[in-house]
Image (cartoon, rainbow, N blue to C red; front, side, top):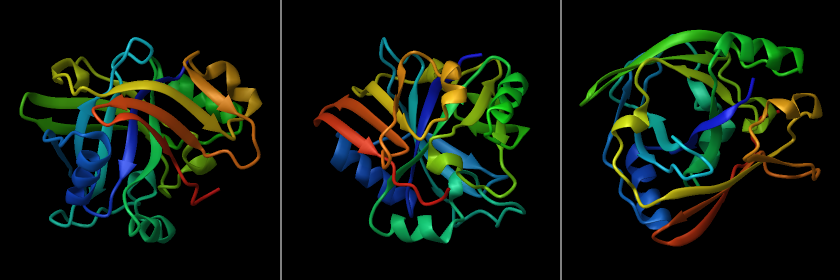
Length: 223
């Protein structure tokens, strides 16, 4: 029951700010994306697959002011006032999403290890190439567990977003989690490291891109 990196999540105060950050930091101005009607958010996505991280991609996400307020807390802590204040300083790496073959079993294993990823729900998003469908673990309170080191779990339907993504020129080189419980260490894929230092960032990643090698760290805003 391995958890593999499906995608990284970078939150922004507005989607335009996220796109500008991407162009300045990584050298890419992403265009593709869509809306999540049930969450009141929208995004841009681009591939970051590499031999070590096949089918990985990067998501820039923000609250969509053109959509109605959802009747639940938004995912990835986007409704957290502390995170929103942090986003005033610029977009932030906030979470990752782990791909699994059996999301119900993965959720149960995480729960035994002391991490509650929430309940499994069905979701979908329209794209220019058709409808994407998936199952994802969502907490009712929207909270990021372990400061974001604990992922949302995802199980895709017949189509994966990277199936139709063109090359971006950006590749995932390495990933490390801070504060990951020892009891759950066997669940991590071999390409995801652990940092046992007391104040290690919840998530640290290295990307190769047109700007060179770029290191991103997440900043915890919740327990």
